[in-house]
Image 1 (cartoon, rainbow, N blue to C red):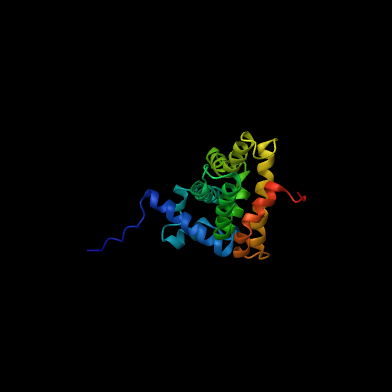
Image 2: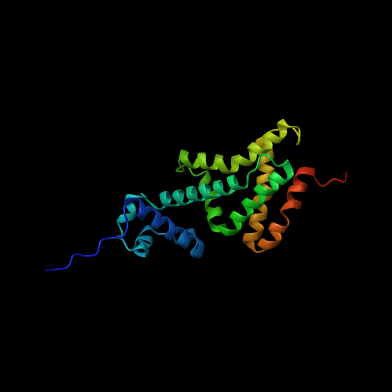
Length: 200
């Protein structure tokens, strides 16, 4: 009697999760250009056609990775958000959470921003972006209502805040700033954002 081959250790949902985990590892170690559904299938031990049940092509895989990144970033920002805090420490906590995510997920964050405006990106992605990037805008709009910051378009103020944070994240990724120095400087960054550089 011929022994039956061992069954694959993945159920329908487990294979998708395993592929995403393997894809993120490849992204960290080799970059997005090295991602291949065929290679991922080999890595997790399934047939080369199996990933097609979850991702129609590499673009779909990249979108799924970016979406998972936004979901993780959203959880990190939600955990740091405390509406009871005064504005400056509230923004500082959110900025620190963002930078910690950027430090731990530099390649993923780059992919998230690259996929954000892709025509193939889903409404689900737009909603995830709104929950994360939009959360800072809501904090700023709330501060405007309370008279804590200047009037103006909250989206524009959010762009300035986001540019500062993402700029620091870029400096870390490029090796111009250590993660320790970046995190130590968060309070000063937020203070200057809120109060400007002019002498008072």
